[in-house]
Amino acid sequence: MKNDRMFQYGMLGVVLLGFALIAFGLILDESRFISRWVLIIAGPIVIATAIICYIFLKDRSTHVTLEGGNLRIKGVLVDKEINVSDIQSICMRDDVGYISYGIRTMGYGGIRILGGTYANKEFGVYTVSVDTRDRSCIVLFHDDKHIVFNLGDQLETQMMFNRISKECKNLKG
Image (cartoon, rainbow, N blue to C red; front, side):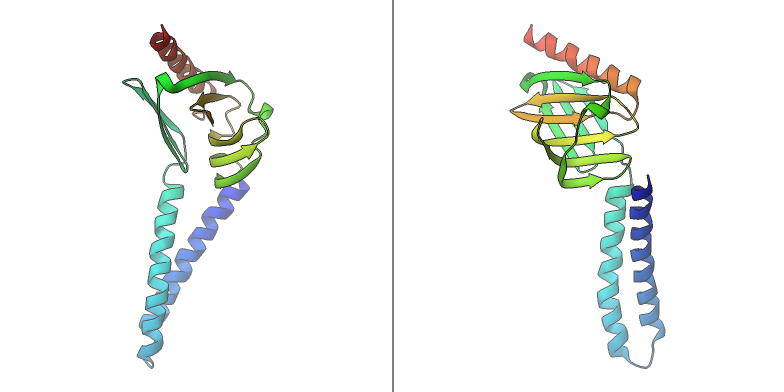
């Protein structure tokens, strides 16, 4: 939680610094050369930071949909669509503590939310989208790749696991 807050305050600081530089550039009348450069530099910084804030801070929970034989997992830096017939195995882990997430190779890793690509001994390089407050997660293996995810609530995660398992059994006969 502390790292999530630090990230948010850091982004807010960059945005405020950009606005301060823009205001400084607009107020400074003596040298139009300086104010023009301040605007040229600060403007893109503010815009880029606002876009990054929107991407990261808009909605950090994992959303999973199962429709028409396709499973879509969407979370922080994760957007995967998997055909249910491609799922080789699925299991439910009731305690996230049993998973050592390993090293984040690309993604977001706060105290509460993990998302992106990670690497560990158990799964190799794999995709993660979990809320660590939920002590359960679903481990999917498809096309020789692992995906570990949960829905932020143990009951919702269990219900989604049951739906995916049932869909897999229906397709495999």
